[in-house]
Image 1: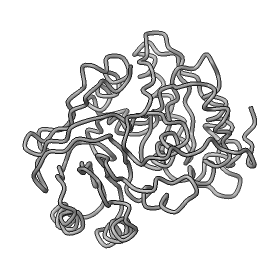
Image 2: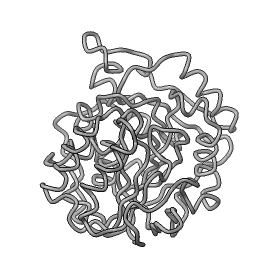
Image 3: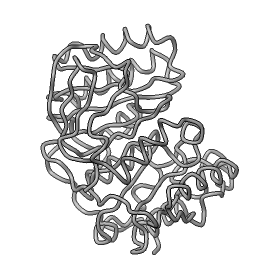
Length: 325
């Protein structure tokens, strides 16, 4: 199936975060899963190591045709926009594939997301989708255009997935035994702003969420939702700019609560923490810090589009239903 740049996408859902999204079915042993690279180039040795982990879970991984390619003149992209979109669309529309897993992030989703035939992907039905970082733009697109819950989780060819046992187990349990991982968080999690809130989860890499504001199918606001945010390699002043944009645009108006993940490479955590408190504390909603998702270790798998309760006293996010059906 060829991506169609002029195809009319399915209409965006009207509400921001008011209702839970469709949950895909959990995986069973022997399930066929596709690995795609919507963003940056993928190191072959890391890909092979990640595939071995999936095979050890009794999954049957298949690699999309252009995963190991590099764009002919933009070396930060894994192949052309059209090829990356084609790989994702064909994997999603393949009836033998039960899940689509991203190989890595980087940059590039925003260049290819509008090349996808969302009508065809909607017709293919719900499937499991996993990724984080730049993949945040696809999480938002799946939520808005397909009404589908997704998994903010580790990617197949990333160092954290290859090296960290707790990261691996969080994803494995979510895929196969989602009822066993209903309460999420690290032992170090706690209150930045105390309180308790209920809502539908959304979020990801905060710089990607800010970049999505104002785009044709961008989420109009986080109102009513439990917002999960993290980032990597953004100095405090750049995080300040990103969060200030979300505040000034009204995108954070009405958010129910906020969970903070890792801030790897963003400077000393004391400085990052002070900034987060400065920018988010005035919203008057509960904020929990160090919940344990994102670019750090461990990187817990966090469902997006699922009803949950955020409790800063216990430092947990508790899902009201399992991530997958």
